[in-house]
Amino acid sequence: MKTFIGFTEALELTLGNVFAGGPERIPLLSAAGRILAEDIKATVHSPSVSTSRKDGYAVLPEDLEAASPATPVRLKLVGSLSAGEMRPVRIRTGEAVRVTTGALIPEGNISIISEEFCRLEGETLACLNTAGPGRNILRRGTDVRDGDIVAASGALLSPPRLGLIAAAGHGTVRVHTVPRAVVIATGDEVVAPGDPLPEGKLYASNMVEICSWLGLHAIPFETAIVGDRREDIRAAIQGRLARSEVFITSGGAWGSEKDLILQVAADMGWAGIYHRVRMGPGKPVGFGLLHGRPFFILPGGPPSNEMAFLQLALPALMKMKGADSRLFPNTAARLAETVTGERGWTEFIHARLETRDGELWVSPARLKSRLKSMAEKEALIIIPEDRDEISAGETIHVQLIGPPAYAGGRL
Image (cartoon, rainbow, N blue to C red; front, side, top):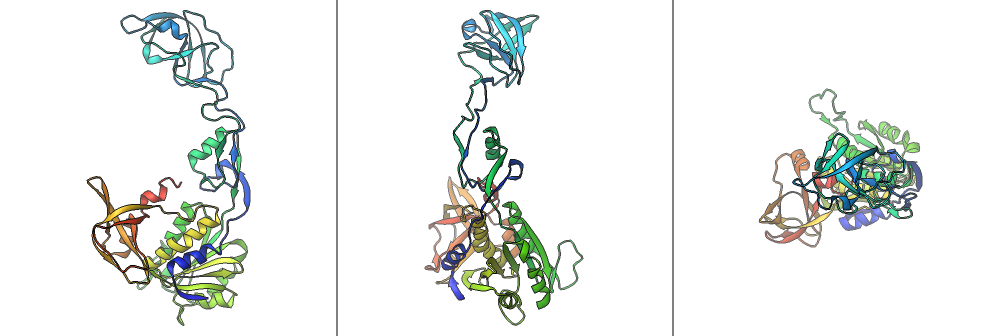
């Protein structure tokens, strides 16, 4: 097992030891957040017939060439069509047919004049505007054409994309299976959120954040909170091996005599790949395979726990569900103040963004509260291993990791 390796090597080792799951077919209504495992071709035209875009009246466009509020053109109302009716109708000059949005277009060279440009006078329709050829008509196959690829393999299934797939004639999709995760918080001091908090104890906030990220990305999980007892930790792991593909533990990552996770994992046959990474925060993180399952040992300190999870564990989970492991986008921004680190280490600094004269600037988030800094960060300033300082005014690439990145085009 490697120790004290660089962050880039740790990420490469992590991603090199996890793999996307095989395909399964599921209903569209259960597929949000999943990754397609095949191209999806339309099996129908959508709409299947040409329909009206508006509530209004079907007319012959040449009948209304001279229509205006001052010189309305009057047409005879000869019928109506509603969405879903497939009754063939033909309009002759001087006639109009009432239509609702989605109604079948009558035969011939037809336009739709919106009802706001009309005035109904008994059985006569006064038209106050023109309606050029094809006005307000949604042609057959405008949204989807039979045979077209509407979603490519590897696409993330967002709600709008699933709507498109449904319109293309599908009720199910083949997707990559998602890894079932187990999240175990360890430590005699850890209490389940919502329970009474005895003096000297703390709530399992790390577990809540990790599980929230998993839920956000449609990864099923179960949790456990166990104290610092070797037999309890082993039982929590052993009892979940048969129904999980990945383990994430929180706390006890240093490997001292009181940090039992590494000892228990090793006793159970854990094949360690690395332990301790030159990254700050997050240094004590460990990763290996337990009976072929990725097993992440995350530190207990909240900033270290979060950074190790976001930068190493979450990319692995995304790859396992068939998604792009590069979850958070980078963007260019100018650095508002000098930041320093330690050469040979990768430093991650919570940051806030602002726009000055149309240019994006990034500043370190200087908050005393670790948890508030984690909650309110919008980006990360990353100092790479080959630098120990980045000067104010430099244009750098920052990682967008705040609320906009949670949904910005990803889900």
